[in-house]
Image (cartoon, rainbow, N blue to C red; front, side, top):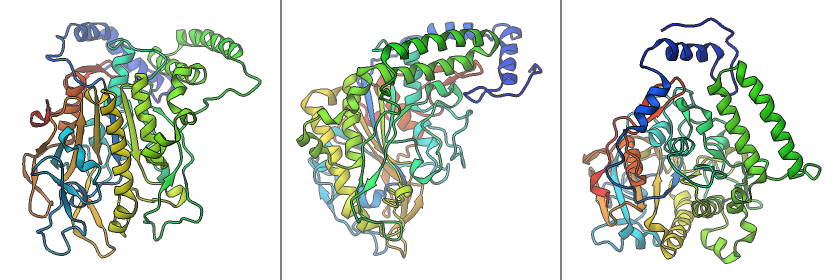
Length: 482
């Protein structure tokens, strides 16, 4: 590789001038290895073998590691100290049982595929496998070298013109705040990674709070977290009219055109994308409308639950109705307000937390989402996914919960493209290890892409001009696909 000399000053998206010149040298001197040729090769790829049944995805991410032994894969015959305090109940699909504290979800298993054999070796609280399929141990902080998340690939394809939709709306929205906000540590996973920051999601912001007088006990407590996601900087100050804003935008475009002549075009493209998004948020009624819950009937909001998770999920449904392709709602930790400190990371007081708050809240919210999607016919074109970054130990610890475990856990896929009433894989007698049909996070990512009509080996072009697959090493899970 030829490295051109130059200042190491970084652009706003993290790439340095030196790296930009290095990539440029490859384009100039590498013969057929040029970005233009790569893009032409990509455009010449055959169309997907089958159209995707899902127009959109709503990912409900239970951050911290939901315990499959207490939710989706109970083992009532296991010894004391391993088996759950909860009992399994029958669902509307013969032979499929789930936790007694999910009575509403038990009526939706005919639309669901339950995977009980998910596993990876990338370490605990590593979100990268779930969002990208890459099992990279220890990769807990975002890196510009990470593979792109599923939502970022959707945004990439939209920006490349592969999907014609309302240009005012992004294809990737992440709620209620960036991953790890509540624990003050930004986590890897839901980013554009090597594609560049222009393909990051539109992150909402939030001011979570608890009921008056409610405090977590010892870090874990069955208390609800309240709040509502909102778009950052989504209102103009009184002195700034839309006309004045557009005038500023014109001036910025002129400045950027001059800077673009001297700086790396790829970094400037990311900068321009960020500006477009900021102006779009401020000026587009279509962008703001899904987040305006004041115009939603109070009874509808009550059905989802007046919790942060419930309000976020209701907004997610409204975003999908507006045309957003990939919407993420994460139930994350909220250490900043001393509530629900570790989300589904239930080491201590685990059964009380699950029974008193987590499971009833999830049951209410997720079932309300499915009811609305089904009633309007949108469940046939919307894929709903429930998953975590890991699971929990089969053995119950002294503090009344379960510790970290990545060797066997569960995921749930419902709606568009899914063969309902199915179970894929099986765990052993203690739900400790996979007994049959191991499934990797990459396989789940590949299945989600398949439902969207995106081939898992679809090539995208990273910031250095290199083609990479949407997900590496993952195969669609044929047993659960309609």
